[in-house]
Image (tube, rainbow, N blue to C red; front, side, top):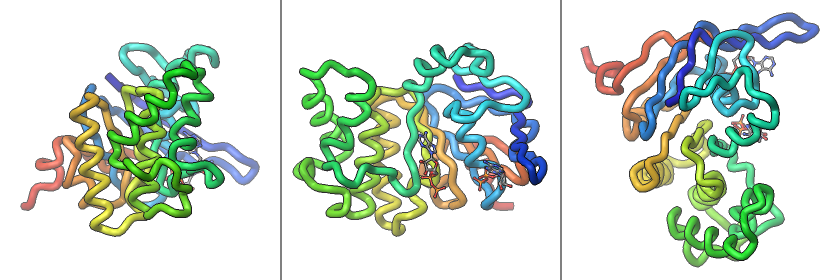
Length: 232
Ligand code: ADP
Ligand code: ADP
């Protein structure tokens, strides 16, 4: 469903050029959990911003469900973007709003019918296991709970694709596992495609079906996790 062909991204500034992503070929199937792993500076964040259409590639083709993204008009892009949501390492919550208000936010922006917003938020709160915390502020939540809010907010627009940018990297190992279990749960329940980037092998091994390894902007290896990380 997501197909990248010979994708490249060069950042240009007064100080020169940085080739952040080069010659990337990638196909991510609908409903799969796909991991992208690599060291800091490998180009993972750039790749995820390309998938999210926050950045345009310098070269190559990006197709989602057969539609070429690189030639869409801004108005068409806005429609497609709703279908791709994002979860962040540092949660990016609104600190002056409650759990409920944070999750409601994209529904307000997206013009979701007012009469059904509360009900939709309640459904999302249940889905991510935050029952009873509706009125809490982010500062009153644990890291894992904050990320549950981040995930619920990302799911509010009912996307087909969830992009997770180091979504568990700020969490302790036990909390990481509980968030990964939640991702597996929503992958199954909602038939959601999940693309996650991480520098942690453990995350990939625990939940990903397939993985791509990035180094210096390029994908150096990709395939089923059991093959890419098999023991010699
Ligand atoms: P990762 O997420 O794997 O750490 P990034 O995609 O953030 O990798 O970065 C890849 C390369 O692109 C790095 O050399 C980084 O310094 C550079 N880079 C990232 N964003 C920008 C930008 N906005 N302008 C210029 N260079 C950038
Ligand atoms: P870090 O680089 O520390 O892991 P994040 O990955 O959470 O931080 O996000 C980096 C920055 O990029 C954030 O400040 C966020 O505002 C911005 N950003 C990245 N993707 C998006 C997006 N889809 N929508 C809004 N902001 C974004």
